[in-house]
Amino acid sequence: MDTLPHLYLNHFYDVDGSELIKLVIKKEDYLKAKPLFKGVDWIYYHEKAKGFVCEHSEGYVKLIEQHFKGFFIDKNYLLPEHLRFRAKSLNANQTAQYYNQVYYKKVTLVPGVVNNKEVVLLRCNYFGDLLKTFKNFEGFEVKGGQFYIPFDLETIKKFTAFAILHCELGMSSMLKINDSDVHYNLLAQSFIRRNEICCSKNFVDRMRLKNYSPATIKTYFHCISVYLNFKQKLADEEKEMAPELFLNEYTSRGKASKTIGQYVNAIKLWYKISYNEEKDLTQLRPKKDKALPKVLSAEEVKAILNNTENLKHRCILLTAYSAGLRVSEVLNLRLEDLDRHNMTIRINRGKGRKDRITLLSKNLLKSLDVYLEEYQPKYWLFEGQFGDQYSSVSAGRVFKNALKASNLPMHYTFHSLRHSFATHLLNNGYNLRQVQKLLGHNNIKTTEIYTHVSDENIKFITSPADVLFKD
Image (cartoon, rainbow, N blue to C red; front, side):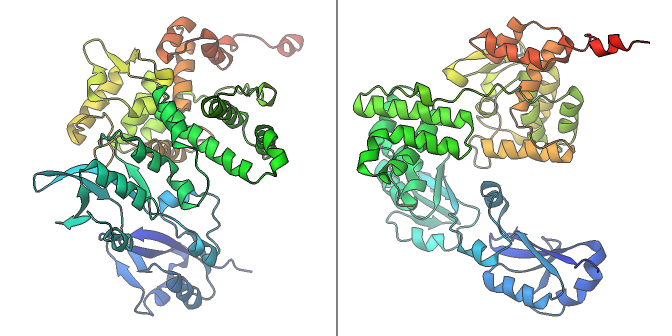
């Protein structure tokens, strides 16, 4: 029995931001589909899409299913790419399930100037019906295709409290607003939209006073909010044992030991700050996994870089590998952190809020000179579309795309570039102390793990089996 021809329904953004369905067919099945493409007026050829499209709605999906009888309709790509990346487990084959999902458009607050006046611009790929909602907010203005609110702290606070109910709100790193209410609204927005309990603002403020990093504050906020929602569902007699019950429950769900460790740390800090109570959760802290780092070979790193065509993307990956940086350290680099005279890179407030100096590769500098001339970043070495920091999600996607283009296993992560830097240095004869300093490890035992994956330590050892059966 012949296999049914496949018709793929892909999400496509038009130039005006409207959403379309692009109809994609394999070459061998094109002749079967061509008469159907041209047989109705609601399907038409789109120059920018370089293919046939129709409007994007549940109704048109049903029309396609009725019109293309005898075809297998693949709806896995109906979601925009950023939503597919964020919701990998979504079964988009069921049209009704896809259209019943609640997704919130991402809106970013960006500093700007309109009529020589400082404003906060609202940036979104496609506002759609969200504009009608924003027009109900006093202070929202539209001028010359720009959507904005006044650069006034009280207005910004009111707008964040209003907007998080209707969209996923983000703030550009170039928008220097340190108000605790604004930052709390951004942290709590997903819980607020679901009408769930949020970690208290007092806890967040205390963490900020203790100089915890934004990443740690975000992680602990999430951990405590999840914990409080779990605790609320317990019977009164069980609430005294809530930490133990919670950690046991999440361990039984197969959560990684590192994740459970984060919950333990967050819960201990929560009780310390909120109730001045020392919770002993030592017995519930799982043993750390002693997995070896996933290291790429030199040839694999070269393949990844050679298969990354975009200049900015290639520079991001090369920076991470050549200097042994974490993704956050790459994205936090400023133009002034490159010391061309001493061929070094200054890392400001890396993990543990520590500064350090690492290598500036000649090869990297050569690539960066071309990149800087073409992209002309103003402040951050790698800037996003609005002039703020490049996002870690985008950097991770760049790395995964490079892996795919190089036909390499997808279990590697962006951090594998840092692991590879350390291992390759050891393979090239540098000692542990030098590698420790470049990586910024406090304890040399942390660096010693790379000796277990350095092939220099084992490649000259002869197996006893080879001695036993030696000719």
